[in-house]
Image (cartoon, rainbow, N blue to C red; front, top):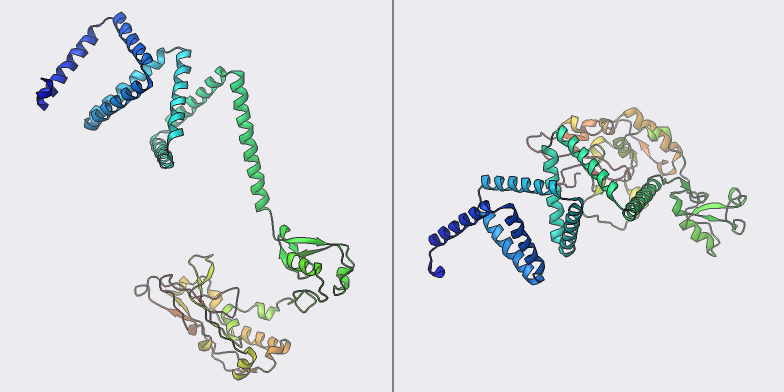
Length: 423
């Protein structure tokens, strides 16, 4: 008969059975309630593991179906009833029941987490993070203080009830965590406090402590200068150390006494801006160097580099030996929306006095400039270097700058999407 009933009839029957069951439960005595609950517990204990799993699945499906159709008001009411029921149950439980319940919860959570996949693990952590963020964002100062106080009391209660074995295990975990934190802190401090402050005694290269080695048998190398042979131990980089251990009879190619010490930069050259140095170059190779946005934006190469095998000195002889170059012949253009957008306005200024003072020093002291003819009427105008493009026509243009690493290179300081060679 039940199989032939319609959906409406079935709904009415279930509703009627529900009302009868609720009426029966409301009329049962306290003793009858205890007997009924005891029978349920006994039946649950005597059931096999397969029967328990099947019952859990049926209950879960029934609960999910009911919760899927409930309204917002019904959900809020259900959660409130569950909260009150749990609070009442926990208020009347004995200490033994309390610890037994916590142990069951811990066991169930451990089993669930042991069987979860990586995706489920990540999803659970994300849900926990979002839930805690929502709770922290909505709680007031009083609620936050209350939560801290409850957390403190809970930890005190747990520590008062822990056994000597649990106490020792907790202290051991804390010792291990503290030792790990201390080791990580020491490793971090050791790393950030390592500086490039060791100089190679041969090539004078600055190195980190792990990039140098001590060399003792100094007197056996005849190519070493006297100031090094007088030392018992010299500090050398790995490259020079390998050379010293070899059977070579010549000094390392980068040894400072092999004319590899450049000396100090004179004040006349040091005072030049990047654009002014460009005016005094005899050869200008072009390399596309971009500078990224920001005040401390780094430099980087963009695009391809094409190299040709040329005799530099032959090319130089064919060029005009007239310096300084005119400002419209430097091959350098700074593109910007407004003059205020330049990172450093001093980098693009041209001072006639500084340029000619540096040129006179180069002719007097640098053999490569001995045949240069001074052009006293060269055009030196900053306006030839800087081009202002209106912001409304090109919103993504940046400034064109020059590389610090190679004063003879061309730097493009333009949009990342529209970087082109500017000549």
